[in-house]
Image 1 (cartoon, rainbow, N blue to C red):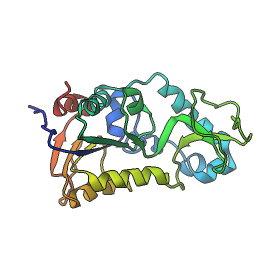
Image 2 (image 1 turned 180 degrees about the vertical axis):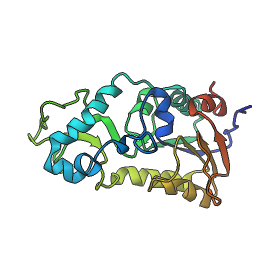
Image 3 (image 1 turned 135 degrees about the vertical axis):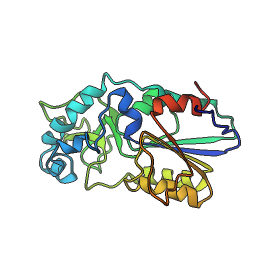
Length: 244
């Protein structure tokens, strides 16, 4: 039986989500036995080099995924986190850091959100010096290479490709939240992909209570998670967070 957590005494709550939270929405993970990376030539279509040499190939790779996302909706786990944030009192702070690029937390209504790897629902100019800001873009661009309305250079999906760094603002926001965190919750993630893999350890070292909600347990002997709830996030989170 899953019991509701009493989180009223915590002042700085940080949640990290990974691919597992979106599986119930029909979003395939990139990693794992059935992951998308098993079917793609990463170096050819998902790197900074690929973007510079063949931006159309990058769109032909990620465009169909964007098209699939247009009919994808948040599930009970996404909605539970959004309702939980809304239920907190004025003395509590909530930060949700997601490794996912599906944009489902934003659709669910989460306000203080750090999309660590960007969002496939948005496009931006491929020239990092261009003044054009990122914008919501529903087109898949698999047939014709899109160009920036400001400078005319190719547009790109607003996601972090291989050979690229996490945006400095996102990393700084995450680190600042972790320094002040007193309750850390990871959902739907193996906790093995850096730099997010270090988040739970950092929170634990700074004295925060740490918990994992995942389909598979974190089996390391020195796991940074003091508590683990094993099961489907969409079934566990509404009750755990008291928003069922």
